Length: 409
Image (cartoon, rainbow, N blue to C red; front, side, top):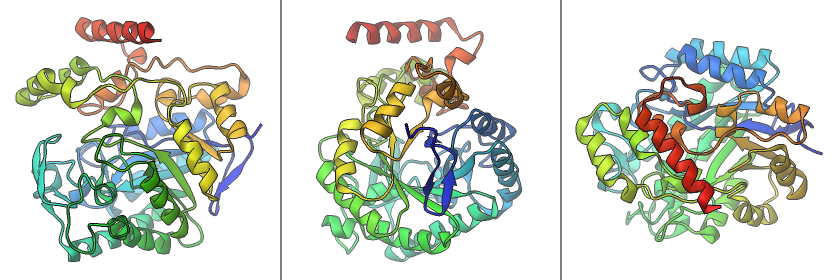
């Protein structure tokens, strides 16, 4: 049984094979760390995880989608160091996900017109988007490297480069968002150029003392996006570029958001916390068309991930529907993956890893109604089972989704 054996990501050894995924916490405060963010990751580290990942940290101002995200810059190093020191004191390693959101933002947050692979309009935000100039791409690649150096100063053991889910690197990779006619567009080889430049800076900055993971798609999850063959080519390129491990995911936040997490988006819960009236009612009216549900099942990415396991040699991190010790053992021992990542399970039970250690039959209590995901766009991520005095309309929506899930089984 591999689950509770140590293993390494590059130069970094983890005490076991579990990683808290870079699921957005929504716990930043004006793009700075908060005591809530600190306490949550400390609780996961204390709960037995091998490594916990602080979610999405923007490499610069234009990389930010929300004020509750982190902006990884020297000014927040002391606060991050407090977090990583605590994580280490509980025996876990600390990672931080670095990235650029591209067109998934607004002028007020990004400090200017949102940028992306190509000029256009992002209906999901909604906002007009300016295509990046070639000189800006070189600058952004350098900022990825700078982010790694800042992460080292803050005490992180690893970084996770976000190259999936329809954020900036993914926007260059996908033909859906990359309509460029220069050397950064056209063929898949050209569309990987920006990723290569970012990874070269990342690996140079990581040196011989930091681990580098990359989150990459196995499919974009919609017609017109990347499919498994092209995504496998991307993964092989990341392996050649020196990545120490790949996190195998899928989906596109502006086109197929629930492909990433599966299940149904609780639209009422999502809009309840939105301060803008136009957005609140717009999403209530049209949200079910913009955010189609994608049925949840345990280990929902496993079939695709096994294709990558057969073709790649580097350590692979499985993410997607790990909710029990049985799931974990199947992925690690049965299918040959090196690590598992979990998000919702560790929100529902921060000590989920210790519970799996103590009980081989343990299954987490998450019911996957996705209230936590609906809430995170406006407030901190939280499991509805941990909250008191939720509005009756939200409780009613949760029960309806649970009933629909039961009927679908």
